[in-house]
Image (cartoon, rainbow, N blue to C red; front, side, top):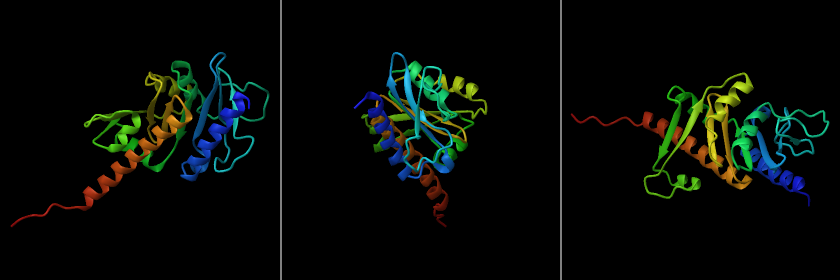
Length: 212
């Protein structure tokens, strides 16, 4: 099996798992996986496709400019430049971007602060932090309509082979050394977002008892 086919199958499997979670509302979201380092090539989601379906047009191979390697009628995802920044600056092998209700609400609640920090959760071990009082932080950046501008700000937070950035009222982008690692991080972040929002809603419902 060629390297291209291996990576296609790997990314397709991840897409199917995320689709089963219903994380691709209205054709939103995009996925990529590195195929070669030199020259840089990677598979990225085709624009406007229903990611709940599995077809031979789900992805296309692009180069270090985010352009299709071979002539095609398909267009790479609008956010291809974000994936490109990940592969240019790190040794990451996979990058995932999804829009969920939870990550959008979190980004709006904490957008003015510019980040949110989580601590005291067992799921933080998914990021490789095993100490008792471990914390994880995710930055929240502005949702620039101009993709090159968005990619430029996004790039400021791409410094390690694994990481994540929330784009306000847009979605989360995570990356890792492998597709498995990137998916694990994405699932862990979404768990933290969901837990935090549920905790806030419960706290609002529970009123303190007043002693007379």
